[in-house]
Length: 355
Ligand code: ATP
Ligand code: MG
Picture 1 (cartoon, rainbow, N blue to C red):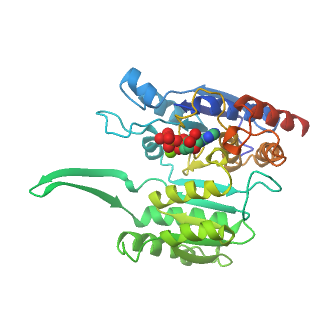
Picture 2 (cartoon, helix red, strand yellow):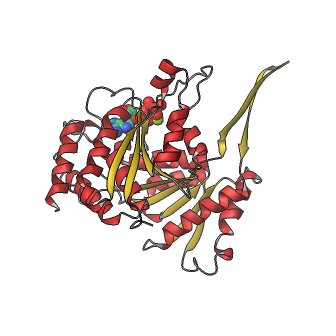
Picture 3 (cartoon, rainbow, N blue to C red):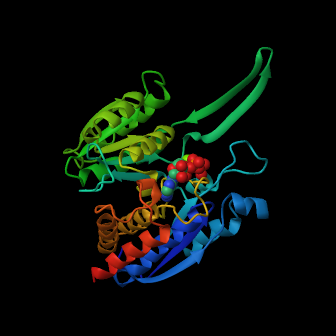
């Protein structure tokens, strides 16, 4: 599919907060490897809280239409969502994942080799998070009873979504040295919903014509998975989880390698892929020019890798690792003093040296 593409059109949706500082860095990293890529075109697109306050919608129709009709892929920054319900507002990233059917959220968490940044055991795992259902269907209601308020949320788990996320996990595991899939669930309590997730993922190899015979399957209850993640993260390879558990586990795993600011992700579907740093809009540091651009730059690399541009992705990843490992030029989240642009410029310089 790669060689057939004559041009690569990338939607850029910085959205809110530090997204506006780190998405330009990711765009620059892609431009730095342009000789490995077809003709590049970038389209700036709106979404987010700020867009909502100005236009009354967090995800303008035009953004979705442009992504569907003109873009091959996209980079999304982060949104600042209000913690209270605001009439008319709903998270554009959750809507985009649904709208474009980006059902897999793939989050590799890797310690930097030889780095003073990551202390503790070496981590090299991928969290594969189901991206379209679970509690994120956001079907909630509140009623008044004689004993006070009562709130309920519906949690949706389907065989179809669990099977397709399972396939992604097995596919990723197959390509890795350890070839291990760990299913994360809580089916001792939620035997119906988590039970279906677990059974659906477990059933994937049986209908795959022996394709995954060399992949080992394990399971962990989500609570013990988090505990073991902190004590012995090296036991995990590919962790596959329903939406909410996947969200929590990947933030926890991020803490193990030093900062949320270095963890990339892609939201992938059968026809579209969107890179997105795992972190949020970081209101506490937004506008200060000190956000770590690494998560976004790595998200760009992961997106290019998913599209088949392996050597472009390798060049970006190598420049990032060679920047982090000496631990000389780091942003404050990694206990350094460098700015977003200093780190970005350094990474760009190292990419250029590889040519
Ligand atoms: P949101 O509601 O948008 O998720 P948040 O308050 O949860 O906002 P996060 O963005 O999730 O904030 O970040 C959690 C913490 O990690 C914050 O203290 C933030 O400053 C820090 N952090 C996150 N991303 C980065 C980054 N790229 N560089 C530096 N620090 C970061
Ligand atoms: Mg957050």
